[in-house]
Length: 196
Image (cartoon, rainbow, N blue to C red):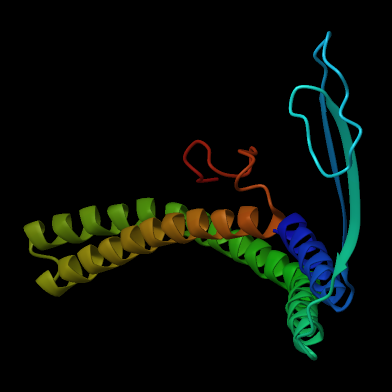
């Protein structure tokens, strides 16, 4: 994208120069040469008659064409210059914004990897809690509310783990886009399942 912006700025500057060139005349040169030779014929030497079977006729013309359009060429040039400046401003903004985007995406990746790790450590504990609550209820030692609490905790942890995996993949894609490696097929993204 930086290369495209740079090329766009250069293109609009060149277009502005080309539009401003409308103030100057178009100079042109034209040439013409015609010759015919037929042996055994007399050359006609009068300048008023052209013998199509025996003649040499060179001609050259130089000229200039100047179209007056008042200030139209300058205004079109200024329009192209404004487009070039708009793209230059966009590039300056992008150069300042890209590091912030990279930093945010990286912090998101770290956060979601930590969330996946914490959820994967908590899921076995909620399974144990569910088994104990079920056994206690079956033996008549605990209320049924304990089982529903354990199931709810397990479902919430499993959902948060899957949500963190999804958000980690999105953050990795955003990080790859911010660093410019998304389209080059780097090892950062895409790849194998992106869990720690």
